[in-house]
Image (cartoon, rainbow, N blue to C red; front, side):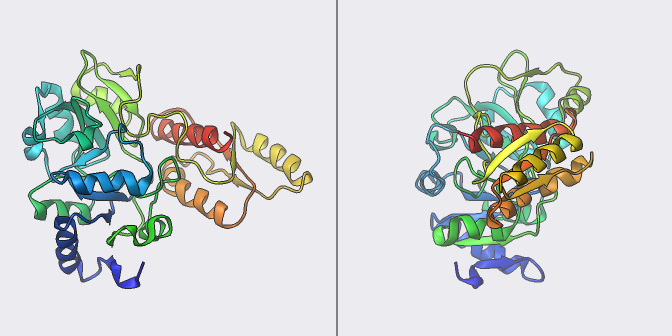
Length: 317
């Protein structure tokens, strides 16, 4: 991709947004920064452009996309029969890393939902994404800007490395603040369900809206629900402690394997922020095996464990 197609926000945000709007209205795809990961974005009202997302990512067409809006005020255009507690959650957590699954309106095209009767929606908490969303009088669909099943991008350069000239433009909003995808909450059932763990925990959601939330059951019906996902090219092994990681590393080094240990010593924020970049760097460095020390299974640690478990399953298959 030519350098001029990576638009840096410093001092030129307005011009970059103008260019992004023009490309989107021409049914082209752009790289979009959010606080979670970078998305591969198309206008939500353009089925032709949305279909390109599936082609570029090599993503199954029945795997739903997430719809990004500028604010909660736009929700009624895209969702219906919204439970009362959803308004509480949106007021508390939007903009932010919470995606809510609701019953769709006729406005939502089948390409977004995989022909399901539900749609996943969120409002991203990122200056660049919100500036663009407030300009287009539309929504944006924006799954992670990488090949399907591979490591998600957390910088503009990651998008270019993965997709090259298959995106017309990458808006550079810096490194993503959070670094793992949003929490997905299905609010279409009698009791809401967590479909994907993210930075906003089950406990936080339950406390905010005074509700009881279950873990997911049934088929994969949202982004990130497949058992194998987020995979680097090298093998990923999981251990529970630093001592376990050191023992396993010694074994692999004795077998002439090039290894790297991922261990952030309990700092969940740094672990989430650095996870995908470190997986990508390991591949570039020719690492044979990554040994990842699993974080505690609470809060953001649940999201990190989820990504590591699915990446490990995919890399060993």
